[in-house]
Image (cartoon, rainbow, N blue to C red; front, side, top):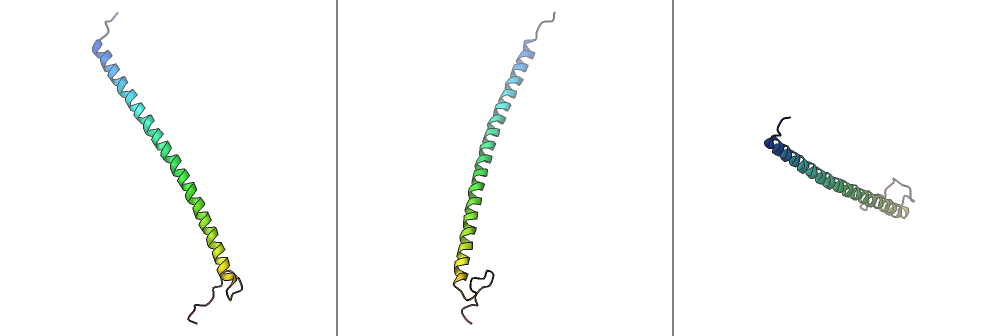
Length: 84
């Protein structure tokens, strides 16, 4: 039966500890990336909601502006400029 080499055991323990450290670092990094992605998706959702509201407000404003004008509320027909 061969005698175990303590030096090899030490090297194995050291390499194993290094691998554990790398895995822990990668798990931490993955968790941070996941949190950042979730926040980015939430921010994107908020931005889309704000953009949709702004577009709806713009449509309402255009409807109000052109319903009182000389075009009789027809969309796409703008009144002439004031200098005419």
